[in-house]
Every structure is written in C-alpha cells, then in structure tokens.
Amino acid sequence: MLKNRIIPCLDVKNGRVVKGINFVELKDAGDPVEQAKIYSEGGADEICFLDITASNENRDTIIDIVRKTAKECFVPLTVGGGVRTIQNITDLLLAGADKVSINTAAVKNINFVKEASKKFGSQCIVVAIDAKKVSENKWEVFTHGGRNKTGIDAVEFAKQVETNGAGEILLTSMDRDGTKSGYDVELLKVITVSTNIPVIASGGVGTLDHLYDGIVKGGASAVLAASIFHYGEFKIKEAKEYLNSKNVSVRL
Amino acid sequence: MNVTIVDYQSGNISSVINSFTEVAKDKVNLEVTSDINKIKSSDKIVLPGQGSFKSCVDSLNNINGLVDTLKDFAITNKKPLLGICVGLQMFADIGYEDAETRGLGWVAGKVSKIDNQNGKFKLPHIGWNEINIQKESQIFKDIENKSHMYFVHSYEFVPKDKSVISATTDYSSKIVCAVEKDNLFGTQFHPEKSDKTGLKIIDNFLKL
Image (tube, rainbow over all chains, first blue to last red; front, side, top):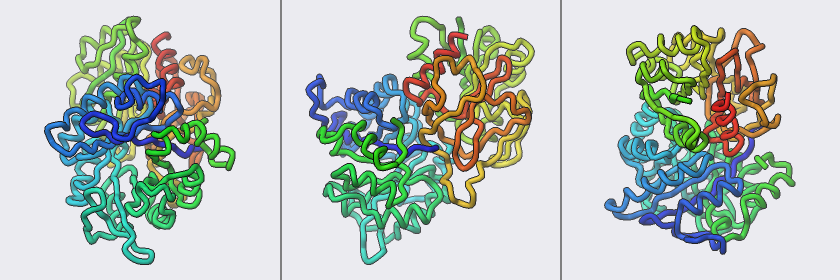
C-alpha cells in the first residue's frame, strides 16, 4: 500500500536556513545540509528546500547546497523558489535535486510547465500553487508570497497544470500559512477531487492533528510542514507514530 | 571491478551517480559514460532511465552502436546489468507511452499505463510503497519482505513469463516492481532514493 508522505520544508536564504532547528547536537544550526541530514535520518520521506533568496547574485548558493545535500541524503529532494527557466531546472537537477517546484513562472506562462515536463519528465515537475480564499468556495491563485492577486481560479489552474504535465501539486493556503491553525481542508478537498495527480498539503500546520486532517479530510497524498519540525516541537518519527496510531498508513 | 552507469543523455541521473558513488567508495571503479569501449570493458552496467519510454529508447538509439553493445554485454556475454525505472521498462518488447515504441526485447513483455480505476488512484504512483518479494533474488539479500521503496511512475512492465518477477507492489493493482532473469536485474522503484534499504540493494548488486 502506498504510504502518505511527510515532507519537512527548509526555508533557505542566502545559503542559510531561516527558521532553524534548535537541536543541541547541531554544530551549525543555520547549515541546510546538516539539517537535511537530520531530517533524512529521522525518517523524512522527502526533503524540500525553498530558496527565498531575494537577490539574483546569491542564487548560486542554493546549487551548492543541493550538491552537498544530495551526496549525503538518499531520499528525494525537491527544490523550489525562483525556478523560472529551463536552465534553472537543468542546474538544479544536475546538482542532485530530484524534483523542482515551479511557482510564479507557471502562473505567468503555463507553457513553461509543459516544456519542462516534456524535457525532464512529469516525475520531476511540481507546480506550487499559492491560493487565497476570495469568497465562499472560491479560491484565487496568488504570487509573490501572497502579495499579488492574479484573478486566476485555483481549481481551474490546478486542472490546467495537470493537463500540462505537472507530476504533483504543492498547494499552499496563503490564509493559513504561518498561522498554525491547520491546513485549509476545504481548499485541499476541492483540489484533490478535481485533479488526478498527487497533492501535497502546505500552510498552517500547528499540531499533529492538522497532518491527519490534511490527509484524511483533505485527501492529500503528502503533508508538508516547516515550523513544527524546525523548532523541535515534534520529531518526524513522532508525527508518523501519531498518524499510524490513527490508522493513517505511513512509512515507519 | 569496473562498473559503468550508462549516461545516454536522458533525464536526471545525478541521484544514481551519488548513491552508487556512496556505496562504491574505494571498492569499485565507477564510470559514468556512454563510451562504447568503456562499456565493453565493464564488469557490470547500470542502466538508469527517466522521462518517457519513447524518449529513453530514442536517446539510446541516438548513440551509435550503444544498443548493440548493451545487447552483447547483457545477452551474449551474460554480464550483470541493473535497469532502474525506465531502464527496467526498456527490457520489454514494446512500450505504449507517448507512442507505440519498440523496446530492447530482452525480457518478453510490454509496458503499459497503470490502470488507475477511473481516477480512483492518483497517477503518477509517487511515494513509498512496500515490496512483496516473490522469489529469492541476489539483489534482495538481507532485504526484508515488505521493505519500503520509493516509486515515481505511471507505466508498468508486464512480463509474459511471470517467473521473472522478483517483487511486486500493491497499488491500484499488483504492479511488477522488480525482475530478475539470469544476469538481468531491474527495479521499477528507485533504490538510489530509497534510503538505507535502497543503498543495500545497490551494495548487493555491486557485490554480485
């Protein structure tokens, strides 16, 4: 039976982890390679890096981090943030990423998703959709960390990325992101029902029950979380044991 | 021992290189190449494959003499070869992804789309799934039955002769996820991404 995945996400800025794990055993809490290793050894099903570096001149640092991480972590590695060109994808994959996550560039030009999935295969193209509720049962796609409204309906866009070859959707609720009040289960439900590709839930996790809700109520194939793991509130293993105790199948 | 990972310009093979490098350390001389002479003088070959069946077969055919060299190696000389993902699928006679495409024809069978039961199951089949070991296989030495492996695929290899199946996995149906026929080994899952158990499979192959 296919297991539900738990994916810790590390925000990386100028080569450093922004919200780091506060573990005593860490030599350098800001080192993304070391943190990825801890997650991988702790049972993470995949590792996700989100590069939030603002300036272009520092973008090469993520390539270097991916290269080092891929030599030590043997679980899938997804990298997102600033993926705009075929060359960006080539660079990340050559460095050792297994998947790339495309956000703004997919909204700007859906053909980019098509071109990328054709060139590299759907298995490594994830489209990250940031959605915000605009009215009852209606969500809109936002870009630039939730600042820019696009006028695009999230459900229609999700269907479109599937048609254009995306292998997975990383769905973030901009209403819930950073709130610790749980995933937007209604949004998840409508997207998982409307598409036939796996959906990764993101944005809002504060408790282990929220992970359960994302999978069982929202229909997500995988759950992504950042702060509950970073700050050591929960270990990946605890999250998995909790889900297992509630009959959600996970890789233990 | 010389082991070659065949780099035929199809898809992302960084993870395969990284994991084999990790396991091989100083014990094995690892080459990543499509050089015919280097392949000929290898003791073992790894044939990765990402993207579609058609794009992988086309890429193999684009390198002059590669398919014949691989055939001599694996079929005539019966030296160990491990196919991963589409690398395994290409053992088949025929594949149906993108367009009907002839495979290498080393293990009788076809590659067709996983039946997702009218959308009841998501495709691609992505994530960790348990393998059901069907027969004793040298690459599964010290691998427990029901171990988790990492999968990413929408197509499955359906061999004619079921005795070649060394493992299956349960999704929308029973999917063949590993085959072994004499010196030919193949995994639909990605040992290079399957954590310690995956690395053990790579180690087993290198120790053959």
